[in-house]
Amino acid sequence: MSKTAYIRTKPHLNIGTMGHVDHGKTTLTAAITKVLAERGGGAFVPFDRIDRAPEEAARGITINIAHVEYETDTRHYAHVDMPGHADYVKNMVTGAAQLDGAILVVSALDGIMPQTAEHVLLARQVGVDHIVVALNKADAGDEELTDLVELEVRELLTAHGYGGDAAPVVRVSGLKALEGDPRWTASVEALLDAVDTYVPVPERYLDAPFLLPVENVLTITGRGTVVTGAVERGTVRVGDKVQVLGADTETVVTGLETFGKPMEEAQAGDNVALLLRGVPRDAVRRGHVVAAPGSVTPSRRFTARLYVLSAREGGRTTPLSTGYRPQFYIRTADVVGNVDLGGAGVARPGDTVTVTVELGRDVPLEPGLGFAVREGGRTVGAGTVTEVV
Ligand SMILES: Nc1nc2c(ncn2[C@@H]2O[C@H](COP(=O)(O)OP(=O)(O)OP(=O)(O)O)[C@@H](O)[C@H]2O)c(=O)[nH]1
Ligand SMILES: [Mg+2]
Image (cartoon, rainbow, N blue to C red; front, side, top):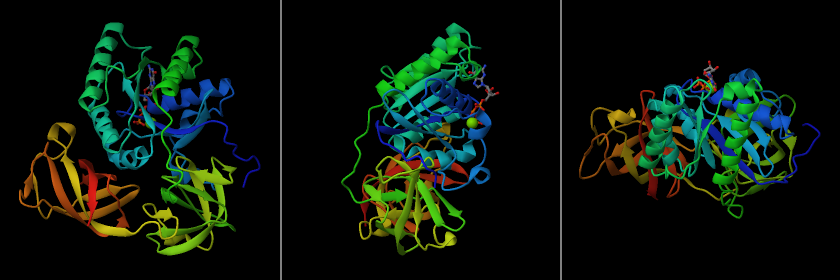
């Protein structure tokens, strides 16, 4: 492990860029790291380092490479750059589940596109409470058109319960800021100020038993198996006993890192890598949960409120009925499930219904937990667990 320890001096928050394909999420992410690196708030991460595939970048016990880290004057951020392609909604769902706030990137040239709306809807469903809007490509946009796009975005946010009138909407150019143009460097600074002030430090459940949904599994030769992810609740220290649900094994945490820096204690909200003693690489997978021993009991039957996306939102065009078997995305897990619609028996796109679900395998469940429903590679519903049966 590397030498410099992680020292907690500022509140840590998890944020991310979301929005339609090609609207400039990755360019803006790179620009943020550049602007802050010049202020001493972290290292510049160039575009092609953010956009590369995790397998190519997996080295050491480093965490999921889609994350970059940086600091403003008041906060330490882990930032996940989410892909805009429809195929990656799954990543969006699991990535967004831990976000304290999001930067919605909307091209001032194109305005709201299907994935802009889909991501706002998913963000609401997975419990992202604060969205700051980056109206990107403002360097190339016409002022009056950009005004219209801003109105449109505020309406979209309001339609999804985000209070679109109060949300900060900042006109930026990731591309020009990356080139060092002072006007647009200032626009990225303004965006970061908006994030610092508009997204509150969330309440962390530090006293709850430790729980971490596994995002990635890596091996370090000679050291063992490492799992990465964001701590959902509680704290963990080197030497702590943990249970790996899914792998059905108990083990001990023998190493702990955040962004390549060793740490003594990880707490709710931190993005970490855990080295696990004596766990074979293929015993643990994305979707498993590492938790304090005995603190959670996995189950497979639950009732939920389910919103069936309308066709306009990219959902189904036909109703679904009892016996429907889509994929459920719960935390980082992807599990098939059987849906029972009860008395009504049928739900149309656009409906919100109460359902009973029987999953194909046991996963840790609890009331209030959000999930997405996917079918043939697209999101068709979003819901919240109401009761574990
Ligand atoms: N004029 C202008 N072009 C931009 C700006 N930001 C990004 N672009 C261009 O828009 C294109 C897409 O940028 P990306 O950053 O890859 O967009 P993305 O949202 O990450 O795309 P996906 O990850 O594929 O969804 C590239 O050609 C960029 O150079 C900007 O501020 N102004
Ligand atoms: Mg990108």
